Length: 250
Picture 1 (tube, rainbow, N blue to C red):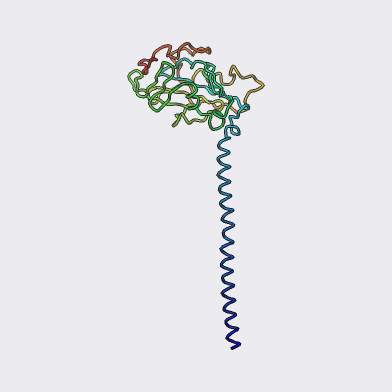
Picture 2: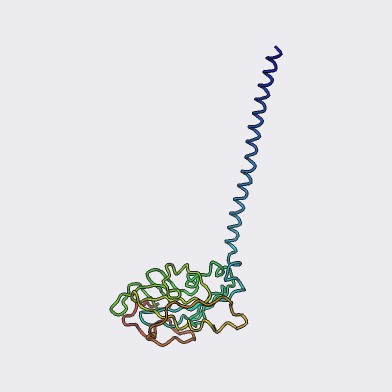
């Protein structure tokens, strides 16, 4: 009788111990899981926060960076006059000198928000894969340049850009929006020569970011004279190309 009683006690103790171990194991897994969830949520929130303030921490920075990029609009065989001067509260504009001036006053044009598309928006330029519309001028893909079909494209330092609107703006870039026959040699815009000495930048505040040189050198002089450094009264071409790109009025 005593032996049977002892056996029952051992069995009961084994069952109880096993139950406690199971419960203990289950409980120990809950806490690490909760910590893991908290860590993941924290990382996501940090990422969102950094994304929202990227304009303040990523160059070009608000109140700290002052950049310039040359830009020109090329029609078949010559450059059109520079865009007229315009100002805004964001700090992304031009002085009518063929240069994009970028010194952010707000996060709207700082950090990753400083793009060519943002400049187009502020300048009132409508750009798509089929046409570029600015002022009274339209450069339309497929329009004739003499006897050849013109191709609308944007070049950065001599190389074609796949998505101009999302192109990040940088110090010293040379940007050309061109309608020209496929394979044509397109020279840098006249304003590229002024990148080293922009009129609005004093020597004491010059950016230390090295300038980027265009990869293609001009093979011939544009057929029209370089545009004046003062804002033109109209953005229409001073002289029409052999077969002008389509122009819209209004």
